[in-house]
Amino acid sequence: MNEPILIVEGITDKKHIKKMLAQPLEIICTYGTLGLERLDELIYEYDLDHRNVYILVDEDYSGYRLREQFREELPHAVHLYTSKAYREVAATPEPELARMLAGYRFRIKPVYMM
Image (cartoon, rainbow, N blue to C red; front, top):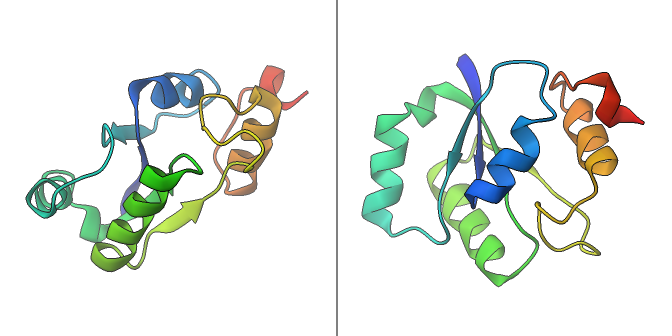
């Protein structure tokens, strides 16, 4: 498989994660729920069938719906979860999110691991 890719819901999630990373990583945003046509476009455009795909979405209804869509279309994707206490990726404290990402072998800047 090619370089990994991370799929998040919004630009705030993307910025929250990107600043912690000590490696280049392509992060794409869904901007909420996806129609089947748009999902197929993403799969084709980013060659998701042949990449290590990670899904990190909010712990709410729209995040649940997105996960279900991705489970059907990309069964090889790895689903990452933020704590239900924070509900949103962007609201998850940096150290907690950094530890979770590091657990999946993403390289994280040391300052975020404290």
